[in-house]
Image 1 (cartoon, helix red, strand yellow):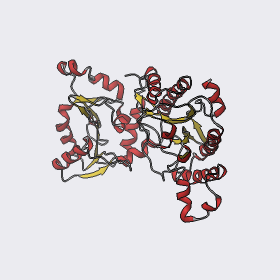
Image 2 (tube, one colour; image 1 turned 90 degrees about the horizontal axis):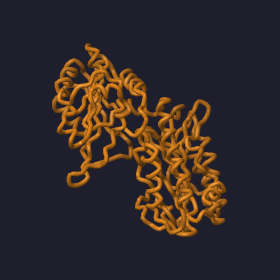
Image 3 (tube, helix red, strand yellow; image 1 turned 45 degrees about the vertical axis):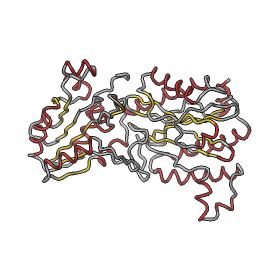
Image 4 (cartoon, one colour; image 1 turned 120 degrees about the vertical axis):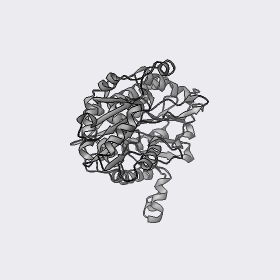
Amino acid sequence: MRYNKIPKNLFIKNRKKISEKITGNSVAVINSNDQMPRNGDQTFVYRQNSDFFYLTGIEQEKSILIICPNAENKKLREILFLLKPEKELEIWEGHKFTKKEAQDISGIKTVKWLSDFDITLRELLLNNDDIYLNINEYSKFTTEVPYKDIRFINEIKEKYPLHNYKRLAPVLTEMRLQKEPEEIELLQKACDITTGAFHRILKFIKPDIKEYEIEAEITHEFIKNGATGHAYEPIIASGKNNCVLHYVSNDQICKDGDLVLMDFGAEYAGYAADTTRTIPVNGKFTRRQKEVYNSVLNVFKKAVKLIKPGATINNVNNKVNKLIEKELIQLGLIKKEELNKKEKKETVRMKYFMHGTSHFIGLDVHDVGTKDTVFKPGMVLSCEPAIYIEEEGFGIRLENDILITEDGQIDLLADEPIEPDEIEKLMK
């Protein structure tokens, strides 16, 4: 692995929490991710299922975890199933975990080979009534691909039709929302690597370079510092591309006088950072660019203070929308009278700021949680206000990652320059 070993106590704590939350006579089954086909005989770079990693720390494919809190045989209360590391397999694919290695990473004492899974599961299910199964329940996620969790649900229901089936995702969502101290350290590391990449590109960016050259510099800094790579597809959007929210082509020339909006974040030990900065290609904001930049920065500073215990994403969004509206009036983009018309108010603001201000961050860049989840200490969220002015050919978005504490918040990207004067100074 590229990152420092994560203390196995984190995974032990996480499994203890889930064992306490699922009902009495039950068995929970959590699958690893599939290896996804790319083309020909190639697969995409493997990324472990976040829930499986959260409970085991194991990043190997074709792995399964069973949790059976009330099994009479205590050795069967936590079982990890792995591919057997046979010589021929390892010649082609490299090292596979031994039982001892998996025990050291996960803290799970009972490790079996995958060939023992069916008979072990049958033994446990015949003595338990409820089966907890996992599935991706992210509200905006849909896919036509019948991934491992979907296939397993169909298979097990056919074999054991008379059991009671329950959803594991709500349990795991509740657990993953509030980060343990070890997780916060990993998130901070991901943010530190991301900050380092921003410092690097401030010295690199100049007129006539390609967007993908900036992406390459960021990638270099990530990999050099132990990140697995990008936590999501990076957005390097210059000129009018600033106004395309999920622009990922990254193939245009950065022109003198334009701004370049960069939305990127390192993934370290499975945990994501997420930042956005918008800077002048030639190192100097125009008067209008700085005017709009300072408007977004003003909203950003106020929005960060809204991310605190007791709030919700919907609550933050509503307050930030009003802050944006005031700035739009001052920038001469809308008139106050337009906001007084209820039927027009939302449309007028949406022209210049059409997305939310926050989302949860953790093992996924858009992590578990809803817009009505009440903020508690240990949760981490983005703060990303913006103003996009398509008719003027540029947009500005600023984004940092905020850890909620008992009495407020901590900015995990506080060391990443954000003041326009500081950015101009560093670009010299």
